[in-house]
Image (cartoon, rainbow, N blue to C red; front, top):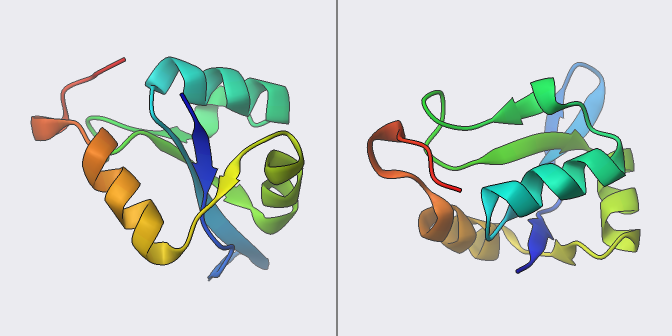
Length: 92
């Protein structure tokens, strides 16, 4: 299993943001916890169809140092499609 991050290009609230995703939701939560990201930052079903965290560029740098795989926009879209949950129903 792997954890992925795209480029921190989304500007909001004075920061640049990116997506943290994983092949498995449990792995995503474990990695986010090690990274120090609060569970309340999790975005997943039913709000969004692909389980992920939005993280800052600073958190992204730490995630890469901890082993997250850097992805292009195209690659993260492919991961989004692979891990998304049809009809917003949970998947682990």
